[in-house]
Amino acid sequence: MNKLIRLILIVLCCNIASSQSKLTHDVYFDTDKYVVPSTEENRLLLFISNLTDIDIESISIYGFCDDVGADDYNLILSQQRADAIKSIFSNNEISESLISNVDGKGKILLKIVNEKNLLKIRGLNRKVEIIVKPKPKIVEEVKPIAETDKKKDVPEQIKSKLKVGDKITFENILFKTGYATVTPDSKKILNAIADALVERDDIYFTIQGHVCCTQFSRDAVNRKTKKRNLSEARAKYVYNYFAKKGVSKKRMRYMGMRRKFPLGGDPKFDRRVEILITYVGNEN
Image (cartoon, rainbow, N blue to C red; front, side):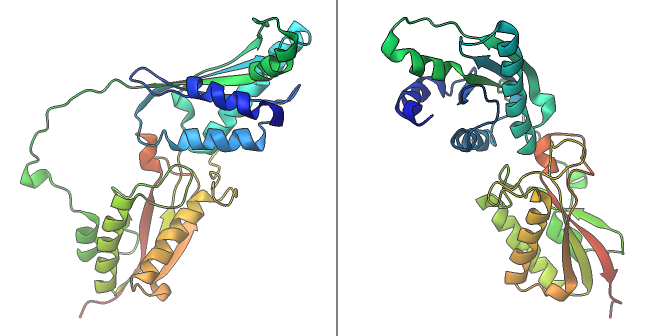
């Protein structure tokens, strides 16, 4: 793979493109392998992180092999490569419902007959092609919200009458895909929530972290630590954030809920944190 780095970088300039119609990315494999090399996985994770702010319509994943080996073997291997990429997408909070194609296409025939370049060309043919199609942008008319339809924001909910078992979802607190850290705008909202919790010192609560898009209620992989505990890491991040802002640790605990409770809407809203009220003191 090391011999191909320079040529791959040149190809990337052409293959990793952003346009109104699609985003593309190629992942390269070693000979006869379908395990994604670490350098290629890091490149793929960077590509996935750039999809956070894109409203995705569909993702297509196509696996390929070089021209060496039997057709049946290459077809199976190319499918295994495509499946490996699909698994990485799923483990990093990309909903499988967005993946429309996961197909092994078999071998790519050599198009250039130049003995000096054969190894490089075959190296570039051992790949998976990823095509991300964004949804077309639709400009919707913004209608004013009637006063009676306005929902209380989180600080207001915290200051209102609460009882044990109440759950408050931190709306507009958005996490970076695959990470336990929030976006800069979300920190401003967390500050307001922390201030409300400091003021409302009669309640105890559990911070619950959630993830989206994983299979079988599994947790997602935390890209920073490579551990499969992202929901807990998100809850712990909020726990530590509140503690730094003056909320007593005696009033808080945190836990990861994995993907046990998806909301059923846009997957990005499953990357969330909620607080469950566990104790409410007597009001004076």
